[in-house]
Image 1 (cartoon, rainbow, N blue to C red):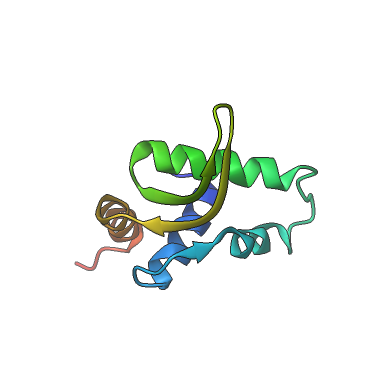
Image 2 (tube, rainbow, N blue to C red):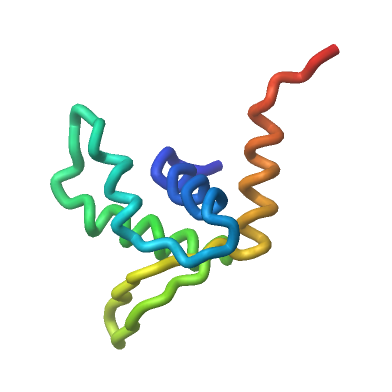
Length: 95
Protein backbone atom coordinates (compact mmCIF):
# COMPACT_ATOMS: atom_id res chain seq x y z
CA UNK A 1 0.00 0.00 0.00
CA UNK A 2 2.64 2.55 1.05
CA UNK A 3 6.38 2.49 0.40
CA UNK A 4 8.84 2.79 3.28
CA UNK A 5 9.50 6.44 2.49
CA UNK A 6 5.77 7.21 2.26
CA UNK A 7 5.20 5.56 5.64
CA UNK A 8 8.02 7.62 7.12
CA UNK A 9 6.54 10.84 5.71
CA UNK A 10 3.05 10.02 7.00
CA UNK A 11 4.46 9.04 10.42
CA UNK A 12 6.35 12.31 10.77
CA UNK A 13 3.33 14.36 9.71
CA UNK A 14 1.03 12.37 12.02
CA UNK A 15 3.38 12.98 14.96
CA UNK A 16 3.20 16.76 14.44
CA UNK A 17 -0.59 16.87 15.04
CA UNK A 18 -1.76 19.14 12.23
CA UNK A 19 1.28 21.38 11.96
CA UNK A 20 3.19 22.10 8.77
CA UNK A 21 6.27 19.90 8.46
CA UNK A 22 9.45 21.04 6.71
CA UNK A 23 10.72 18.71 4.00
CA UNK A 24 14.21 18.68 5.57
CA UNK A 25 12.95 16.29 8.23
CA UNK A 26 12.38 13.62 5.59
CA UNK A 27 16.10 13.52 4.73
CA UNK A 28 16.67 11.70 8.04
CA UNK A 29 15.06 8.61 6.45
CA UNK A 30 18.18 8.02 4.37
CA UNK A 31 20.67 8.97 7.07
CA UNK A 32 21.13 5.45 8.47
CA UNK A 33 20.69 3.53 5.20
CA UNK A 34 23.70 1.63 3.87
CA UNK A 35 22.74 2.27 0.25
CA UNK A 36 22.00 5.97 0.31
CA UNK A 37 20.04 7.37 -2.58
CA UNK A 38 22.24 9.38 -4.90
CA UNK A 39 19.48 11.81 -5.72
CA UNK A 40 17.38 11.85 -2.59
CA UNK A 41 15.99 15.35 -3.18
CA UNK A 42 14.23 14.17 -6.34
CA UNK A 43 13.13 10.94 -4.68
CA UNK A 44 11.56 12.77 -1.75
CA UNK A 45 9.96 15.33 -4.08
CA UNK A 46 8.37 12.61 -6.23
CA UNK A 47 7.11 10.83 -3.13
CA UNK A 48 5.60 14.04 -1.74
CA UNK A 49 3.96 14.80 -5.09
CA UNK A 50 2.39 11.34 -5.21
CA UNK A 51 0.99 11.72 -1.69
CA UNK A 52 -0.35 15.18 -2.57
CA UNK A 53 -1.99 13.82 -5.75
CA UNK A 54 -3.67 11.08 -3.69
CA UNK A 55 -5.08 13.72 -1.37
CA UNK A 56 -3.17 12.56 1.70
CA UNK A 57 -1.00 15.69 2.03
CA UNK A 58 -1.27 19.40 1.38
CA UNK A 59 1.87 20.93 -0.13
CA UNK A 60 3.06 24.47 0.60
CA UNK A 61 5.59 26.11 -1.66
CA UNK A 62 5.90 27.46 -5.17
CA UNK A 63 4.49 25.89 -8.30
CA UNK A 64 5.81 26.85 -11.70
CA UNK A 65 4.35 25.65 -14.99
CA UNK A 66 6.68 22.66 -15.05
CA UNK A 67 7.73 21.93 -11.49
CA UNK A 68 6.75 21.98 -7.80
CA UNK A 69 9.05 23.50 -5.20
CA UNK A 70 7.59 22.06 -2.01
CA UNK A 71 8.87 23.61 1.23
CA UNK A 72 6.35 22.24 3.76
CA UNK A 73 3.58 19.66 3.88
CA UNK A 74 0.62 19.04 6.12
CA UNK A 75 -1.46 15.90 6.62
CA UNK A 76 -5.11 16.00 5.49
CA UNK A 77 -8.01 14.28 7.24
CA UNK A 78 -7.94 11.58 4.56
CA UNK A 79 -4.22 11.13 5.23
CA UNK A 80 -4.86 10.71 8.94
CA UNK A 81 -7.60 8.17 8.23
CA UNK A 82 -5.45 6.12 5.83
CA UNK A 83 -2.47 6.15 8.20
CA UNK A 84 -4.58 5.02 11.16
CA UNK A 85 -6.12 2.25 9.01
CA UNK A 86 -2.64 1.11 8.01
CA UNK A 87 -1.51 1.11 11.65
CA UNK A 88 -4.57 -0.88 12.71
CA UNK A 89 -3.94 -3.50 10.03
CA UNK A 90 -0.40 -4.01 11.37
CA UNK A 91 -1.45 -4.69 14.96
CA UNK A 92 -1.56 -8.27 16.12
CA UNK A 93 -4.99 -9.59 16.92
CA UNK A 94 -5.63 -11.03 20.33
CA UNK A 95 -7.99 -13.96 20.65
